[in-house]
Image 1 (cartoon, helix red, strand yellow):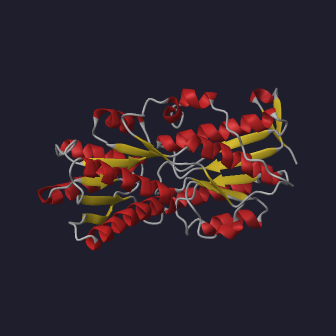
Image 2 (cartoon, helix red, strand yellow):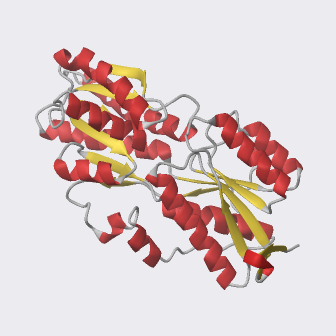
Image 3 (cartoon, helix red, strand yellow):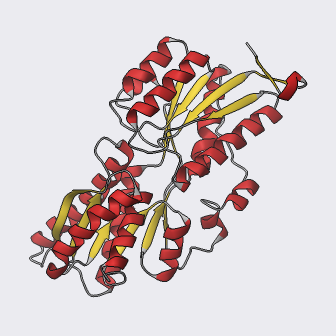
Length: 341
């Protein structure tokens, strides 16, 4: 069934075969803006191939406004959209609204962060977040070892409970560090020390800074060597806290995701590495694969979109910049997977 939209004054009409609602966790982070660009590009490419597809982009302003995300899902169910691409704010809380959509015959594809009940979704398209956390730990520990600190004192600055993607990053980071501690113990060597791994940044840059400043202040006399912040807002708030306490460049910080301030902090040496995802590809494949499902193709249950260690040395490489630069993203050609009926 097609959907007909009338333009201004009713003078123009566009018929779409599919209307796809793309619902991110939030709207403010630059990560979601890349998701939006990728999703809309997929809609354009599908339309160019004769499968007219409209993208309805709609999400809560803040990543901790769970009720608003549920309301947006329900609103799109009521509209009778063809399908939903969703980045769930909470892995458990969003199960019920997704079940409502599926019950109404609206398939749901999950991106970015997992849903507790994987049986009800079409596909999960995301970064391998656990591996991203492992990469962060390996990069941080190497930096510190090269600095003559094989047994550093570390902080794991968590995001917020219930976010499956950041939970996995934190677990990957923690597991690598704990394995290293065991290896050091078994070898009779001095071991890494956890200074903190139970503090949460919250959903925004401001909450992250408010949590980071007292945490850093209380631990600075113990000699903080390294720190990991697992998403854009936690990393940005941490950078601001480090600068306000005159601790920037005095400890090694690895973050996750990119924004203009984070990339500048990387150039300035206030961040020593960022683990980047490919949100443009994630948004693109989320829409493309859902439409292929609607077209009757068999879709595999999970697709990984990749994770990358970015440093000051490789920041200006074109392959790095296309992960976040809007102009380079426009030039990208995404090779979608082949499916069979």
